[in-house]
Length: 193
Image (cartoon, rainbow, N blue to C red):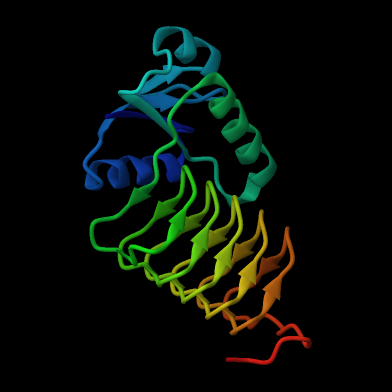
């Protein structure tokens, strides 16, 4: 399958390598704001030249600083019929009983354990850990070395900083920004495992 990457900035350049590591062919960048090497044009231009089909997909490379735009782009791509593949780096480990949403990106060395659910458009950077039965919401970023422990819940549109920990049974509300090295509070009504 050939993949277009939506946004040609630093995140897009990184995802180009990720796409190739995952065994896909990079077709070019879609970018509404910039031009440059391998930028095929704006979304409207590219949609006419490269219409959706089963042999072409799109990866969203808009970063965590603009989660609302990222979500809107995801919806537009789905509505227009593009495939949004899940990309799991070959040296990541994902248990076979994990549910991965469309457009999810799993980086090198990331681990996702049994019974976990990762929402659509989520990004797990290298070394991120999602333990058993945990739930990571749609359009959420887990930074390198972050840990979501067993049965924890991280809402949609969240950012979990490098080395941050979400303890067993903790719940992180939608739209939360957890700083690097921080520890999320536990839900008082659920005892730890």
